[in-house]
Amino acid sequence: MHKKSRHSDKLTAQSKSFEKSTQKSKPKNPHFYGIHAVKMLLNRRPQDALTLFVQLRDDGGVSDEHAQLVELAKSAGVSVQMTHKDRLAQLCDSHQHQGVVVAARPLAMLDESVLEQLCQKDDVLFLVLDQITDAHNLGACLRSACAMGVDAVIIPKHQSASLTPTVAKVSVGAAEVINVVSVTNLARTLTMLKKQGVFVFGTALDETAKPLHDCDFGGKVAIVMGSEGDGMRRLTIESCDTLVYIPMVDIPDRPQSLNVSVATGMTLYEVARQRLMRGSS
Image 1 (cartoon, rainbow, N blue to C red):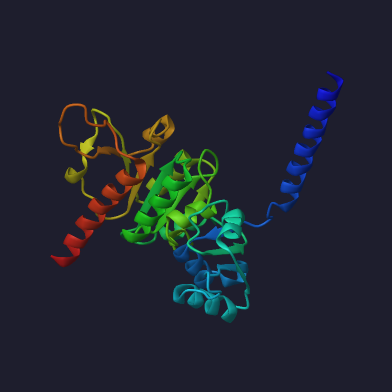
Image 2 (tube, rainbow, N blue to C red):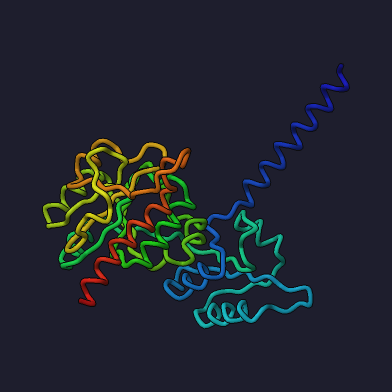
């Protein structure tokens, strides 16, 4: 019994020592990864990039695509290190790095004070994300928002995913391009937008909701998307001017709802489609 106890204590000590060394080696700055995310970061805010890590091929060289990123980094004065894929996966905690990782300062969100200025645009379009906590969903929403001409994405400071490297990777660089505004009180922000002439549409499976294609998305518009599990919070719903839903085919046992990033893309496409049709007529 005594020997077993001493052996157990030794293993515990070794485990604590490993955890301590792991914590010490944890990087202070986030590591962004993926070719598109890294390229956009180097293009948009090279002053925040610290070190670019690039995967070496088996022959000791780098791919043409990676070589372009190396030149981009060097032209901005960013340090470049060649390494192997396992080291890259360790740095960014993902095997989806596509051979490039950059240590950089965090991507900052904009303050809500910019919203009033954006509201001066006659056809301003906001995407409001209420309680989207999954980084992959947030990244996909930012990608669709950027592609569909959204002027700013608004998210609450609490109960929301932040602009992590995973968000940047999933958004394929859109997180570096589109305005992301963090607000303290979402309901209060929506009230302010309405005072600036913005019409607020909230997406919900509600008997009072209108079909998406029956809505007029001209002028100043905000589209509110809620989380998959809980939807929009009560105060958010009460701040909407109109509730809308995406019509689906009526077949037995179909899913009752869509993934929030898919629903966001479909909703924003309808907004963009209507606006493109008005522009061409």
